[in-house]
Image (cartoon, rainbow, N blue to C red):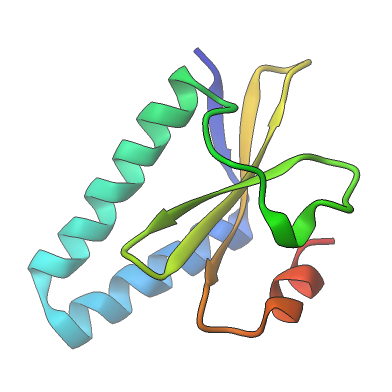
Length: 106
């Protein structure tokens, strides 16, 4: 089973989305965010290469993959085989321009 590590940036972004969901929609929606995070982490730990490669980041050195949560957000991650670790690097709101994702992932 792979280890799942969140970058500080991705963790902060996720926390902000959960907080905003709580303020705007209530506890039920913020709980759904947390449930989807746990489900994602469970699946990616067992099957680190199960999600599709992110089309906007195919030219990068690493194979970035994405998982859609809450209908309009993508968890951007990559799998490091040598350390058996999945690194979550960003949470991207798909309503943004595609160039923003390319610029955010260096």
